Each structure stands twice: as structure tokens, then as C-alpha cells.
Image: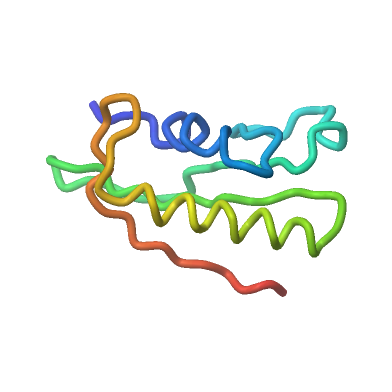
Length: 102
């Protein structure tokens, strides 16, 4: 059994500077908790040794510019996650793909 990648990332990203909340679900009071990030596993698989998850991390803030700044901060945090462990779970490698601002 593999670790829950959504729970792992929420725990890791919640204390990121500039982020007031993180979850897999958007809370009803999300507007009072901005800036907020939502983490969802969208696909992936395993090779019987490691879990290879693809996750979507969405940033919410009061303006598009603020959401973009949060996204860049979270991106930097994700880059630092590489080859570390979170709660005893080894994060061996995670290529980061970013979607440019639309």
C-alpha cells in the first residue's frame, strides 16, 4: 500500500508562506480562507515498487495576480520536495509540469 499523495501534499504545502489553507476539497468558506490551495490526484499508477502520481494543485486568491504569486510560491515548494521525506514517506523524484497562466 502506498501513501496517500493528496494527504502528503496537503500536509507539506499547508504551512507554505502566503498560503492560509490547503485541502483536497474546497471548503464552503474558501473566500474567507484565501489564499488557498487545492490538491487532487488526477492520474498515475505504480510499478509495484513506487507510486507515480500525477497531481493537480490549484491556487485561489482574491485576484488573478495574487493567485499567480501563490502558484509560483507553491511551485518552488514542490521543487524543494524532491528527494526528501514527508511524515516518513520518501519522495524520490517528481518531475514538475506547470500550466502557464491562461
